[in-house]
Structure formats: structure tokens, C-alpha cells
Length: 56
Image (cartoon, rainbow, N blue to C red; front, top):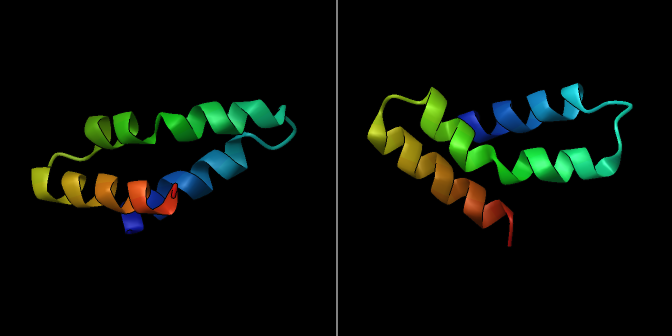
């Protein structure tokens, strides 16, 4: 949960003043960001599963 929250907050801060579509594009990339940034396979799997739950 912490990995996903940190990414979502970073994206929120980054897109301030940008068109709303930029946020949607960046949120779609969160699983790729997790793969790139998290070296522990178990943590990455849990983070991607948690993110998928938040998108329902």
C-alpha cells in the first residue's frame, strides 16, 4: 500500500497545473513504475494487486 500511495501522491504533485488527461496517463503507468522501482518481487506483486483493487 505504501508504494502505491507514494506514487499516487508524487503524480498528484507533479501534474498540478497540467490538463487532467496527464494524470490519467500517468496513473495508467503505475504498474510499470512499480516494476522499475521495486526490486523485491513479492512487494511489487502486492503493490500491483493493491493498485488494481483501487481502480475498480
